[in-house]
Image (cartoon, helix red, strand yellow):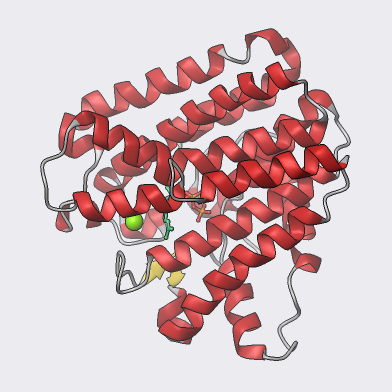
Length: 305
Ligand code: FPP
Ligand code: MG
């Protein structure tokens, strides 16, 4: 995404009205959490900053922030936790693009980290972002028991058992095979939905939500996270590389396990809408206070990039 342009200007998508303000808050919060470019060894810090500031939509931090605001409109801890989630998300994109994984040259409209800085630096930039995420969470200004709960949730979501790495392994192993619907669900829920769910849960925890509310919002997050990956699969078929900022049509070329491959496009659209509807139902008890999360859920299924 060219510098100075907002995601809305670049993509032409209709973002929720509050999105741009939240996004700018996230950009400003990310900046001081990263070592400066000239901090030795400068090469790794250049690579980290290149990928973090390549123009992501910041959906995970915004979900975290808005989940917290249901319970505490001023939560600063949620902003920090959201940044940590963006670091983990960025690490996952850097590693996903490596030749040993999806082998991609384009991400967020720019050359991938390894194309620009070499494979060794890209691997280390991903490692560093994952570590930095937990250092960032350790300093979240929220009571210690909640801080530990956030760390536990985020670590599990990034991990191997029903988490992002586990989902990625299953995704790689499913490539080129005919897989059962249950396995496809497992891949999407682990590879993508777990971190999105953790973003909402971390926000609720930082905002001071009661245990039952954290669980309720976790169900919201799990379902929109799942819908998000179904939509990602759909966009890979329906959109251009220019619109997506990453190589389109790759899933089919690599014979990936996707919703369109298993169910076709029309059914996939239906399934994404159903998941978002199910997610939005979880917000009923919160009434008007959850309006922003509702708008985010709608946006996530209607997005075109
Ligand atoms: C696009 O997010 C990203 C996804 C849909 C997630 C795909 C899952 C992985 C890449 C997991 C990889 C895991 C490992 C361990 C390598 P987005 O549309 O929010 O992207 P943006 O931040 O660029 O806007
Ligand atoms: Mg992948």
